[in-house]
Image (cartoon, rainbow, N blue to C red; front, side):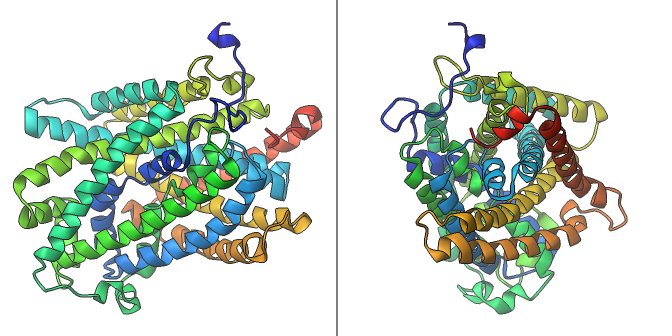
Length: 481
């Protein structure tokens, strides 16, 4: 059978080959999307500098607790619904098809902008490394397009191959950051202090901006459900993988931010991060370990970004697949490869979008980090925050109709608490979006970029109504898989 004729599902019974990945594999995808070394090298210094908040380590703990609460309802939903559409499927079952398709459009915008935006910093960082170490003077966009090509090849292949690649890259990332962390405590200029972990430290600066910046570091933690059709025993695997991923991300980031504060000195971390930016991390690595380690860590930053690119690419491909299968998007997107069982048409579509955007930004001559990376990843993170709040509401509505044996905490209390917290966080993000962009409050970008989220949501809702009126048979199967 020709590949173009294949339209098989991603899912298979638990004892068949289609169910290729278990808890570790999904955790690799989820944690890779959050890019630990990238967050440590770029996100944390920026958080300290922008918010001037000493309590960044404590905020990781607080936000981790909020996401653990969210996971209670999210995991309960995963036990009842196994669908590569994740947010889209959950909201459809909880709040209805119009809300579900609207959510799908926002999810496509959010995950695509997160993934494509990363090519800006990947291209810039890799090109800079090649120039400084090998003397190769390559344009950022050429390096970015080379990254697109490699991601495209891996995205075309079997999901378990991708999981093994991410597992290796993550092990390297964690070991690198752990060595950095321990060295900071060993060389602490002001001694080891628990001050950055206290609530008083949280109130030292612009707490709202600090929460937004810290929350962006968790993006991708929710992706476990996207792989529910390809994992063994989805009723248990998705829940376990999500809980493990949230705990690992929150604990590791809190520890790293604390170590960074100790290494620079609590009295100096704010000023130093403002002056040196991401360079502060390499300076601390050289100061407390050695120059060789610092140089090696910069190389691993490139692999960290690549792992995040691959993880988000796989997530987007599966959203395309799910929406194509349900008839919301063109049917060919639902095709899977005869040999690799991957959603190869969805993967190719995401690759094409990435190429178009990278080429467009290259032609514009704009800075790839300040524009492509900064604009797109902040927009994507904001969209995902809204999706998390909507999903919490969907969980409540879904289980009010049928408890399905879930306990009160998972089906009601946890999603209500997390929904309120995430909705409040989304509002805080909107109010501090100028700080995230590094733009003036009067800049059109401050309202244009977030406005895209609402535009896509509205377009999705209108499309759903048109679908209901003109193609009711397609509308009826929306979100059903």
